[in-house]
Image 1 (cartoon, helix red, strand yellow):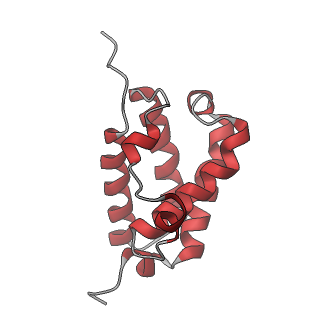
Image 2 (cartoon, helix red, strand yellow):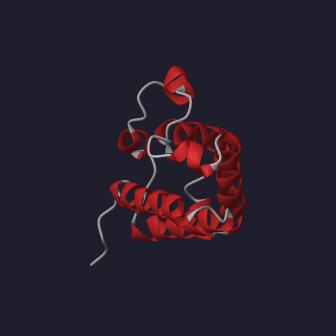
Length: 128
């Protein structure tokens, strides 16, 4: 068990598909995030996030095979991401993770990563 990846411990591909599905189900109803996710790109964004998370947590390397290095900060640069966008994203991702009822250690690993990664995506100055 010590050598098992978070991908395996979480339940593999189906768990990550469900996580992303539950996250994106909340996006269209959120006015803050709606501005960041154009309607025509929701399906593409869903697939990209799913493949990225699968790869990041120890699953198949399909994301890199299709898109190259993740370069998260660079790929998010075209979008205006401030504290409000980050907080909305984190709120919905937290709800999606918690809805999966994963083992506490797996849940913590996911949420810790999302906390750090979402803060790194902020590219707008904090308003005075």
